[in-house]
Amino acid sequence: MTDWKSPDNRYLLERLLLGLDRRIDTDPPDEVFAIESTNIAWPHIKDCLHGTLRTGDESHCLAMIRQLAATDTPFMLFAHQFGVLRNLILGQTLDEGAIETARHVMQLFGEMEESFAAAYLEVFLNRLGTRNHLRLSHIRALSDKNLLAYFEAHLEWMARLVEAVSQREPPGMPELDPTRCEFGRWLENDGARLIRDRSHIAQIRDLHAAMHHVVTEVGSIMNHPRASGPVYALLKKAESYSLELGHEISLLNSIVIMSVYSKDPLTGFLSRRFLDRVLVNQMEIAKATESPFSIIMFDLDHFKRLNDDHGHQTGDLALEHIAGIVRDSLRQSDLIFRYGGEEFMLVAPSTSLAQAHIIAEKLRQRIAGTPLPYEPPLTLTASFGVTEIAPGTYEVVDSRLVHDVIVACDGKLYAAKNSGRNRVL
Image (cartoon, rainbow, N blue to C red; front, side):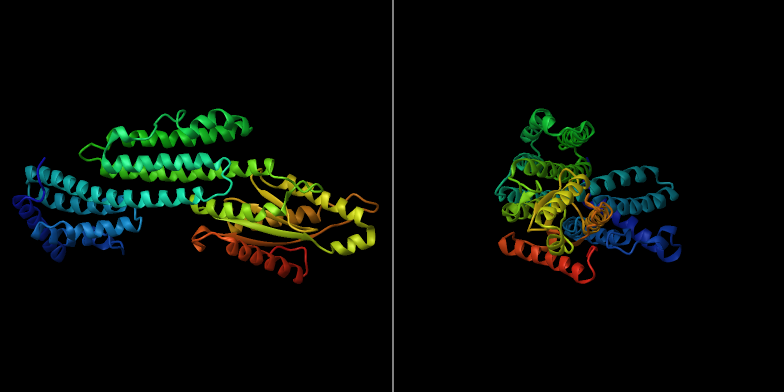
């Protein structure tokens, strides 16, 4: 392998770059008129290379690379623009008929790209390790882990992956067989019994296997001389699979909560005394999976009048009627609480504000369109308040944060009632 930073190679590359500068001034190539307004456009790379080639000091370009990596700019964007610059240099070399020089320049550009990719990968691994550690700390902070203990084990698996790649030590890689890691063993045994939807469990198995396949690829190439760029791309994909896996485990965990926590005897919904604990856990999970969740508060309109006009027994029938509509309308992973007499709270994991509004509107329509069987049938309506809890809006999860979230959603519910009832805000 040649050294692109040797004096002779630096002189050659600098001469070619200066020749490109002159060409741009007199007969600019088409690429000059399609420069992206970004600091990774090839003219910026050319400028940093000038400084590196003049002095032999890579810091001119490494500073750019590290800044891009620190902002999670995909390396492929840099590599694309670097390739544009390489092709311009090669084109000018071939125009001069210097075939051997062109081959040599191809090799030198390949070495430069690997050098920059290695710097990018180093920053990315540090950031991935930090992000994974934070996710792990949020899961470890949970008061009730239930199935999330398997997400914790998975994040520890990811930590071993980051360490092995950082040290370039294939023997230190985590378990690569998807059926033998802790989550894989659970998925093939207790998980298969919990997840009754065959297509759903097949989807989770495929996701888990795909992540292991990607990591196996990392282990097979990470010590190759030109591996930094591909390893970075594979690890990005592995992190994406990891977050998706955490999302799936958190949804399955909600199913467990609905099955094991004690219920309100009238509606069958979770009792309010578990609400704070569930909200704290959901906030930690949102941080760990980088996914927002939403809460929906709703209550029956004019419930006191219903009790006064038809009696409390009819009021209870109305609550049971509403509970049946809600159960038939929600996902298996949604958590529903009886918050007060006629007031309910729905915790919707991995659900944005827009998605939660759709859920609430469907519930509103079904309640209004399904009269309570009575003589004559009684039309019921409900008012809804919706709030999204995005993980980027808070740092520390505590009882004050839970209180603020509930108050915000409750405020929207009462705004809906004061705006005429039977609506979603």
